[in-house]
Length: 141
Image 1 (cartoon, rainbow, N blue to C red):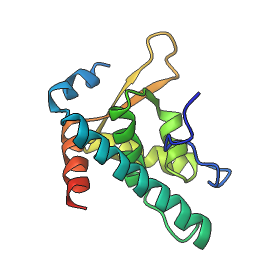
Image 2 (cartoon, rainbow, N blue to C red):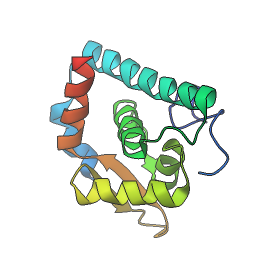
Image 3 (cartoon, rainbow, N blue to C red):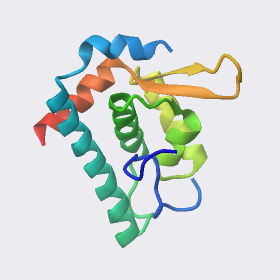
């Protein structure tokens, strides 16, 4: 079971909702930098959920950013993310989350692979480009 800190878990969220890993191995930052970046990504995600819980879920929405933050943390904590778990983390309807996930894949920011044993299951990861972009953003804040 995932820890309470895993950003894909949203207790206050609304009720709706490969080989690529090896490409990142040479791109991983030093341990201290990775930890600070992951903390920043988690904090950003929690702040977004808290803002929605306080102000209303229908006022704010950046599912693509939520997906990128989720996959960033998953990458640095060695967690495999299925498309359905990623969609939940987007804090929106499943159809909207899937649309954003597909858009991110079309733009080369995420990649996905089908489970060899269950073709319905799709694993999603950040590409090296997206990983670098999120790292650069987190370093700037």
